[in-house]
Length: 486
Ligand code: SAH
Ligand code: F3S
Image 1 (cartoon, protein in one colour):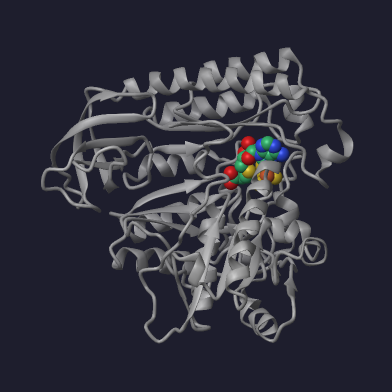
Image 2 (cartoon, rainbow, N blue to C red):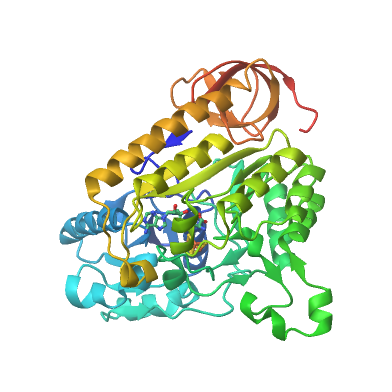
C-alpha cells in the first residue's frame, strides 16, 4: 500500500454515506453523517450514531432527505480543513431546498474553531467537540428550538466506555475499538493534543466486553485505537499524567498496553487483533513479546517516525533518537522476523536541510518499510512549531522531498511484497475486490492486501492463500484451503 499526501486512506477521506445496518423501525428522524480524518473519527461517528439512535434518529445515505447532517472533521493539515469547508458549502446548498435541515460540525475542527463556525461562517447550527458527544441530546433540543448550540468542553475522564457503538458502513468483519483518547505527547507540529485533550485510558473490562460482543455478532478482526496505544494505562480511571498520585493498590493492579493486548488476545483467541498507532518512544519490549506470543495478534506495527534526522526529531519534540529507533526496529525484527512495519513521515518541517532529508532517506533504507504515509509539513495554528519556528522550507522543496520519499517507499513496498510470493498465508476475506467481481479481497497478518479468485469461499472466512504474484501494494494468489482458525 502506497499513499501520498492526497491519497492516504485514513486521512482526509470521506466515509461518505455512512449507513447503519442496525436502524430501528421506530425512529422517525434521519441522520446523515460523514467522517474525515483518522480512524478515531470513524470510530467516534459510530458512538455519535449510537447516542442519536436513542434520540429517534436512523442513519441515511441520502443527504437530501436528512433532518440532521453531521460532519466529523479533521484539523491535522490545512488541506483536511479545506475539504470540510467545501462539504459545508455543499450541505448549505442542499439546505436551501430543505430549510428544516440542521447542520452540525463534530470533531477536531469543531474543537479548534469553536463558536467561530457560528459567528463568522454562519454555515452550521451546532458545534460539538470530541469529548461532548453525550451532550448531543441537549444540543439537539437547542437547535430544534431554533437556537445555535455549542459544546467544546474537553474532558479529563470521558472515554465513551459505556456507549455501545452502532457499526456504520461495516463489512461485518472488522471493527475499531477505541482504548485511549487524547494525547499528551505534544509533538511540536501536531494539533491533536489541542483538539482532543489530555490522554486517558478506557476501562479494560469495557474493552473486553465490546470485543466479546463483536465476536458474538460475527466480527473476526478488531483494531484497538488510540493516538498512542503504547501509552495505555488503566489504574481505575484518571489521566495518565496523574498515575504518580495513584494508590499502591491502584498501581499494583494497573493494566498497561502489553497486558491489555494479552487480556484481549486471551478473551477471544480466534479474533484477529490489530492496533494503531504505536509511538517509538513508548513501545516496550513487553508489547513486542506479547505480539510474538499470540498467533491472533497480527504481525504488523504502524510506527511513525516523522524524520530520520536527530536534529529534526528534537525540534519536533519526538522523544527518541534515530539510533533508539533503529534499536527498536532491531528488537521487533529479531523477535518477530515476519513483522511488517509502516511509517508516517513529514517532509519540510521548519529548518529541515538537505542533509536532514538525506537522513530520512537513509533511515528508510535501513528499515525498508512495508507501507508508508507521507506528508508535506502543514503549519497548524497554535502548535509550538507555529509559534516558535518559521515555516521556512519553500513549497517546491517540500514537494520535491516528498516525491523522493514516496518513490523510495514505493521501491521498499515492492521489495516487501515480493518476499510474500511463493508463500501460503492466512487471509481474512473482507469483501469483493475493487477491480474484479470474481475476486475476493482480504489482508494477511502483515496487513498487506491479498486478492484471489472467489471459488466457494465467503466473506468473514480465514483462507490459506498461495501468493503467486504481487505489485507494490497487492498480493495476488489462489486459495488453497479453509484455515483451521475458522
Ligand atoms: N499518533 C497519531 C498521529 C496522528 S496524526 C496517530 O494515531 O496516527 C497522523 C500523522 O499526520 C502524523 O503521524 C504525522 O505524520 C502527520 N501530521 C501531523 N501533523 C502534521 C502537520 N502539521 N503537517 C503534516 N503532517 C502532519
Ligand atoms: Fe500528534 Fe504526536 Fe500525539 S503526532 S497525536 S502529538 S504522538
